[in-house]
Amino acid sequence: MTSVEGEGQPSLASLQRLGQRLGVDDADSIVQQVFQAVEAWPDFAVEQEIPSGQINTIWQGISQGAAFAALRQ
Image (cartoon, rainbow, N blue to C red; front, side):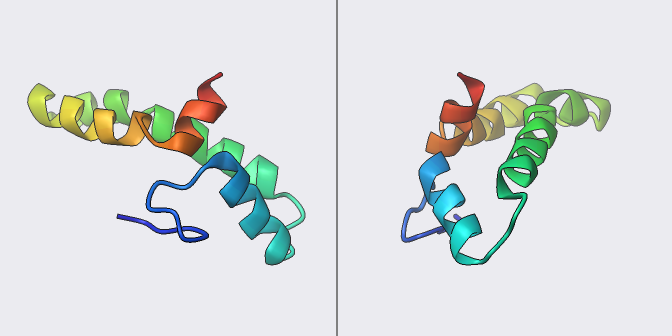
């Protein structure tokens, strides 16, 4: 599990604060790029012939994260 700003599943606001604290000018753009890449996980997993049960389990863990949920809105 990843911890950002003390959160095991960091919120979007936590990722933004971290970007500001580290002086990353394009942090929002980077977060969006990562979101888009992670959102493609199920398709990538199918291409790699990962069993559907594992795809679903991993996808549930990813998609229930606070930052991910905020970006999907």
